[in-house]
Amino acid sequence: MNLSNVANKAATDASEALSASLTESELEKVAVIIAKAMENAVLEASSQHATVCVDCLTHDQDLAHKIQKKIELKKVALIANLSSFR
Image (cartoon, rainbow, N blue to C red; front, side, top):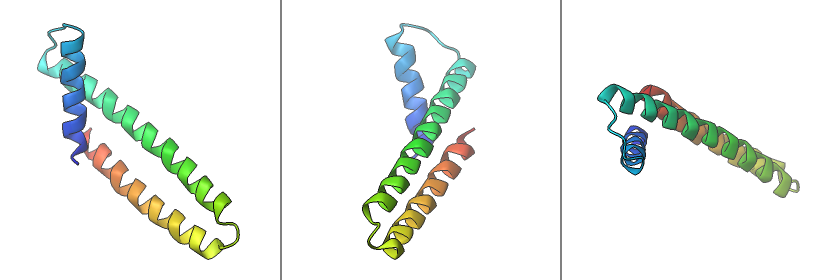
């Protein structure tokens, strides 16, 4: 999944839904706003997932930390993908 494509498609869809004729520069700005919103959503969801992981696996803290670490690595990769879009 290429997140810049997702953001660009969302910006184009928003433009069409609003019946607005946006310039290429305006579409890029909208896409950056969408990418930032996706990044914020990823950070929030990742934080919630890590909390749930630790809460549900209190009996096996080692497993909880392993899962939490994998979640963190996936989040970092996704954030890097989003950040490179800007």
